[in-house]
Length: 388
Image 1 (cartoon, rainbow, N blue to C red):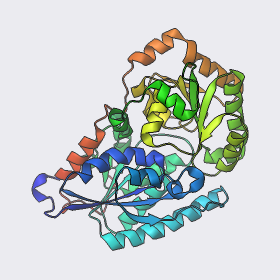
Image 2 (image 1 turned 135 degrees about the horizontal axis):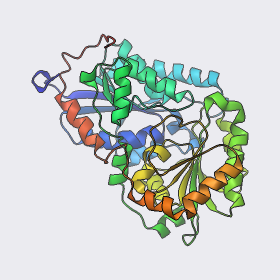
Image 3 (image 1 turned 180 degrees about the vertical axis):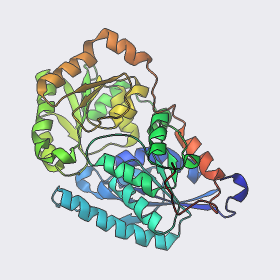
């Protein structure tokens, strides 16, 4: 692919956002596209971003000034949190995306990560002979997420892995190395770009005492352990409370097993919020003593903020880790020990202060946009072949 054969008209790019986790990564890319006459950005919003129970993050997207081309209902407020309902939600958004792509006729579908709506976008784009670009393929993780991520890579034609290790894995999966570009994780761009708040301001926003340490808790269900999510989050919440620590909990995603997690959070006596704008989340973690739970933010982002992560359980198993990550099991005693290390281990904290994040330098969006502008879409091979 080369600059000489790129299309003459504006490149129409379709993006679908389901939740804060993908929006925070897409935002710096979409911001650059919105300011560049080369691109014609078309955004669909779906998933829990439309749900009142999860904070209606669509309001944040609108506040940030992005034009929303399509709203596609995916989840129902009162639906059961089961694997079957996850599948039905995929069916709804897949049908909606097929209609969306027929309407706007995109030149490229930009997908990412391991999130259901983005998986559906990759499948629909490939079936409609639209080039698909996938961000952060090749990474390992737990839950159904790993299957979604690798499946998306097989539907995608262009790959933007975050690390060299992930890029090597994509090559081993038979993806064409000519279309694999290691660019870093775009969530780090958000950290670089987010205005830095004062600790007292952030604590006030969270309803916390700025003079005392606090932890941010984000713990999602592991779909293969859906029957255990209640006891797992209970151990986490008890660990924080037993230490007399301040905490703020952010609701999990709505994968199978999420309902009981939300119920335990509401009954815990610890402050919680359904969601946060990306900038607010960054500052909440920036001023915290640690991020506790199993969010990918603890693997990708906290190293750049020089904040410890206490990573609980199996959801992030196998993923490349910075040195600020403390892996623990689900038991209260293990979690307490991990939090104590994050708060009081001077040698460990000295390491956290000087580590370099293997997931990038905060300039991933620029690389992605630059590469997309150089590709020859007329010669892009829609029919994929396994490359030995």
